[in-house]
Amino acid sequence: MDATVSFVLNGKAVTVNSPRDRMLVWVLRDELGLTGTKVGCEAGLCGACTVLVDHEAVPSCSTTLGDVAGKAVLTIEGLAPNGQLNAVQKAFQEHHAFQCGFCTSGMIMAAWAFLKKKPKATRSEVVEAMEGNLCRCGAHVRILDAVESAGKAMGGVR
Image 1 (tube, rainbow, N blue to C red):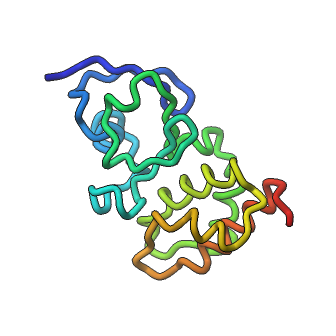
Image 2: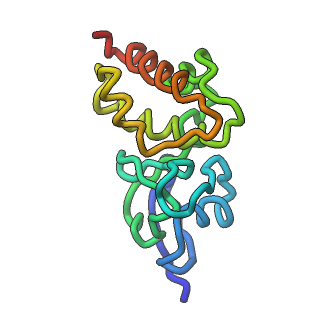
């Protein structure tokens, strides 16, 4: 049964008519046309579908539409609304922190959420923060380098 659910998406108020138990990833992709959020494992384990809900990184494949009612959701599309890449996006580009790119949006969202809280993170803290995001191509070292570099660019020089 459909319900009317309102939330803030990438800074704009939206209202969606859909079942409250529908997974957010499908609402974003199928109903709102935001395909930057990827679908990987559909079990909340790979991180490809990571979005921010009230500034916290969450797997949108295990977060329901009802879970975000009245909250703020930020997707990869909302990180550079004016085409200006943020520090994390720039660092991923500079460090070639991707191969196929499938995991990239989830990685960037997780890194952004983490670095907003702790830009002066150590390498081991970065490793721990990114554990929930997997890259099948093996670009993890470049990803970790990019996250560290972005932290420095965000004022986290150790």
